[in-house]
Image 1 (cartoon, rainbow, N blue to C red):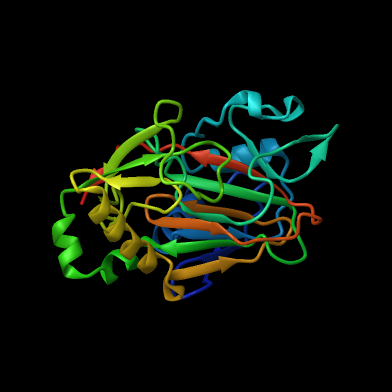
Image 2 (image 1 turned 180 degrees about the vertical axis):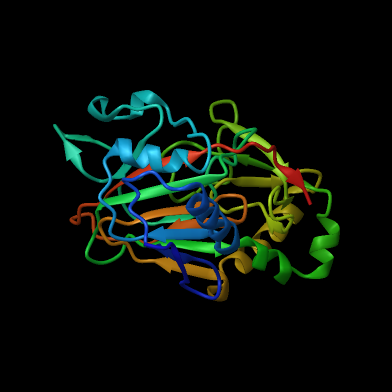
Length: 282
C-alpha cells in the first residue's frame, strides 16, 4: 500500500497512512515520510499496534534515538529505560509509572535546556482520556513571520537562557534554581538546518531571560512573543486515540497539553531522536 500524506490543519500537521510501523520501511517510504515531516512539522500515524521495541525501531529509521535525560531515580524501576520515557498518571504499587502525570502543560519545546536539543519527539498512545489531554502544536515559522519588525531587528543576534526542573508542567515562579537544574543559552531566532527557514526559539515553560536586556524589558518582550506564539491560527490540536504514533519537529514547533480529569487513565510512550546539527542562529 502506498504512503499517503493528508494535511490536517492550515497551521501544521499531516496524517501518514498506508504504513504499518511494525514492519521495516523501504528507503523510498522513509524519504517520503521524512519530507512530509519537514513540510508539515508534525505527522500522525493512526491505528498502530506497537511494542516498545517496535516504537524504537520505527523511530530509528529517521535518526539516532535520543537518550532519556530525566533523572533515573524518578522512574518507576519496573519501567526504567535509557531511551523510553512514560508519560502517564497510572500508578503501580502506589508509585507513578511515568512523568507529567496530570493536568495541563505550558507551551515548550523538548530539551532546549541542553547544548544539543533533540530534533524530534515521538509519542505513542496506549491509553487516553475520553475527554482532554490533547496535545497542541504551534508553528514557530508562522510565529516568526508574525512578529513586529522592530522585535525581529532588536533580537536579531540575541540569545535566551533556557532552564528546566524535571516534572514542572506549569511555571508559577520567576526563575528555576540554575545551580540545581540543566540550563543553556540558544538564539531567540533559529535557522532550521534542513529547511533553512527561521523560527522563534523561546517558550513560556523554559525560557528565563533574553541575555543582554534588563529584566523588565526582557519580561515585556517575551510576554509579547508568547502571546503571538499561542495564536489559534498557528495551532493544530491533536485529539488522541489509542494507537496513535505522533512525531514532531522540536526545531520549528512548540507543544502544550490541555487539562483532563485525574480520574481518567493516560499512558503514552515517548522516544526522541537526536540531532546531527547544533542550534544555528538565524
